[in-house]
Every structure is written in structure tokens, then in C-alpha cells.
Length: 391
Ligand code: NAP
Ligand code: G4F
Image 1 (cartoon, rainbow, N blue to C red):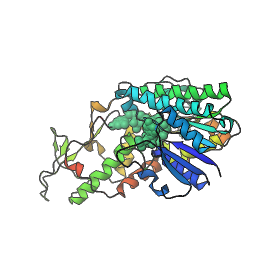
Image 2: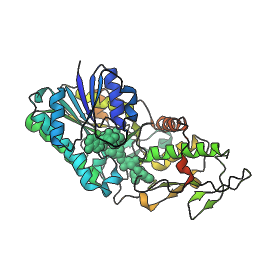
Image 3: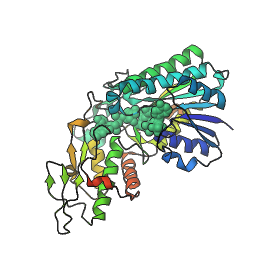
């Protein structure tokens, strides 16, 4: 039976990877940092599994990391632990550097110094965010309808393994340092290290301060609250400009209940969004190869935040979503990554990996996930929701 250690097991990807490896018959050791509250919600279904062990550890503590590697004799080590929020990295750059960059170095060193160095395969969670402002270009042939209009080709922007990195945030710089370190350890010490350059991937388990889940959770919460108040979701009232909240004074006479608007930043940014379940499969496949390498993992489609909003609201019958959304300068970043579209041809060919879940299905699946949660969230009755510090 193979043993895998997952750093960052309580996160979105950590939970899906745990499910996958348990299904494949692994013994999984999940590492979670100490917290004053329970962070195991996403891996709750595995906690009683005999093949799953949850241990405490923090990747910024080199001795702790080394102790974990030596104690558990892993065949595979996955580093998914990170301060993974780009916006937060501008507010907490040092912490981001220590966790997202330094944490990877601690694991690489622990493996290098282990007597089992040559038997351990290592996966590093690199990110499309490292491309930052940069992209490659190519000419693509258009479809029949465009050809009839005399347009044969267009220039497409994309990123693949050969696109140079121009990071735009402290997070991306920390990830890039970790990425290069993993390569250097591969080339200098003959270690089996792979970088998965993953484009954005989301799910029902996505953290609530990433834009996709922030949107789906808001819509589901608002709908549930309005249904609780027997108020028609598609027919809201006048906006109180001061509180940025809807104050219903309709026939039901619900008086002062407040429904805050969804506060978002840049809606024009484009991302190549896939589903986390598909992407953890690619991580595992990388470590099953004979030789270590780096791979882009992406769907090959880019959509704007606005398109995500449109599909999510349409799913609950709302076509004019603009009246629910407030563009708040607080959520704009000091530097933005405008466009990410990955070319995963290398992963398609070498790993035989392909995404199964496409954009529209991702959005509606996330909406259903939040709609089915059916929790009543009392915070909707205040206007303090959507704290800029967190989203
Ligand atoms: P996530 O949900 O934010 O999970 C991050 C995990 O890291 C959590 O389990 C977190 O623990 C843990 N962690 C944070 N600081 C730690 C520390 N000092 N020591 C040990 N663990 C620590 O992120 P994700 O979406 O699953 O992404 C997984 C990895 O892929 C991350 O490295 C991310 O940067 C990278 N990535 C993600 C995407 C994406 O679109 N999702 C794309 C490319 C790359 P807590 O539960 O205690 O917070
Ligand atoms: O959902 P986001 O915060 O994801 P972002 O910045 O692309 O980073 C995610 O993907 C990376 C891979 O490319 C990972 F490495 C990283 O760990 C993380 O998982 O923001 C997506 C876009 C951005 O352009 C942002 O400016 O949405 C825009 N946005 C607009 N309003 C917002 C908001 N983002 C957040 N988080 N909150 C907003 O209110």
C-alpha cells in the first residue's frame, strides 16, 4: 500500500485529493495546522477512515516538516499548503512569502536530507498566477460562420509551459520562487519533483472569499433569506444608497430587514476556470510518470467574472443581475492579472488528462451546492457583510 502525505489537506484541493487517493487504495497522511476552530469540514467524510490519518503540522516550521517526512515514510508528498489568496498577499506579503514560498523549501530540504530521498515523489502546487501579465500568441482558424464573413483567422492569447512568467503579486512571486526551487532540486539532487501549473479551479468546496464562491454563496443566501421572508427574489425594492442594501417596504410589510448588495471588484478579468475534482486527478497522474516534469493544467477556455455572474444569477431566474451588485473599489487589487487561458496540450498528450467539467456546468454545480445548503444566514440582516479585508 502506497503512503501519501498531503500538506494543506483541509483546503479545497486537499480534500478532493484525499478522496481520490483513498479511492485508489493509498494510506493518506493529512497535515493540518493548529487552529482554535475546527477546519476539518471538507475532509469530514474521511476522518473515520482507517486509511486516513490527520496530523498537526505547519509548513513554516522546518523541523516539524522534517519530522513528519521521516516518521511517515511517504512514497508521494503533495504540497498544497499556501496562503492562497492573491488579494490577501498584498496585505500580508511577509506571511505569504514564508508560507507559500518558504514552506515549499522546507519540504524540499526535508526530502533531500531523508535517507529515502530517491524513493519520494514530490508535487508542488504551482499557479497560473505566475504568468501574471504575460501571454503567448498564435493564429487560430475561425469557424465556418466567421469564414463566410471573410474572417479566416484570429490571434489567440494563451499561456503554456514555454510562456515566460511576469508575476503581478506577492503571492505569484512566492509561488514562482517555490516553482524554481522544485526545478533546481530536481536538476541538482536528482529528486523526483513535479510542478503542476494549475489554472483556476473551483468547486462547491471553494473558499468563500474567492470570487466564484463569493458570488454563488451570496445568491443562494439572498434567495434563502428572501424566501424566509416570503419576498419575491426577482422583484426587489428600492435601494438605500447609504447602506447599499435593499429595504423591502412591499405588501408583506417586512419593514427594516436589510439585504446587502454583493460587493465586487474587477468584473472584466478573465480566468480559465475548471473543476477541482478534475485537477487533483492531474496532480496524481504527474507523480505516476517515469520522469518528473512540469505541466500546465487548464480547460483552454477563458471567461470573465461578468460571465460567471450572468450564469449564476440566471440559474435562479434573474436576468438583470446589475441591481444586486455594487462595484466596490476596495476589491480592486494594486496590480491585476487580466487574462488567463491555459494550453494544456502537454498534459493531454503525456498524462492523457482531460477536464470533464466545463464552465457552465461548473457554475450551475456551484450554485446548486450553495442552494442546497439551505442554511439561514443571520448576517444578511446587517449591512456589514462582504468585508473588503476578506474578499
Ligand atoms: P486553499 O483552499 O486555500 O487551501 C490551502 C491549504 O493550505 C489549507 O488547508 C490551509 O489550512 C493550508 N495552510 C495554510 N497555511 C499553512 C501553513 N502555514 N501550514 C500548513 N498548512 C497551511 O487552496 P486550494 O484552492 O485548495 O489550492 C491548493 C494549492 O494550490 C494552494 O497552494 C494554491 O496556492 C494552489 N493553487 C490553487 C489554484 C486554485 O485555483 N484553486 C490554482 C493554482 C494553484 P487552513 O485550512 O488551516 O487554512
Ligand atoms: O477568485 P480570485 O480571488 O482568484 P485569483 O486571484 O485568480 O487566484 C486564484 O487562482 C490562482 C490561479 O490562477 C491561484 F493560484 C490562487 O491561489 C487562487 O486560487 O479572483 C479572480 C478574479 C480576479 O481578477 C479578481 O480581481 O476575480 C476578480 N474579482 C473581482 N471581484 C474578485 C472580486 N476576486 C475576489 N477574490 N473578490 C472579489 O470581490
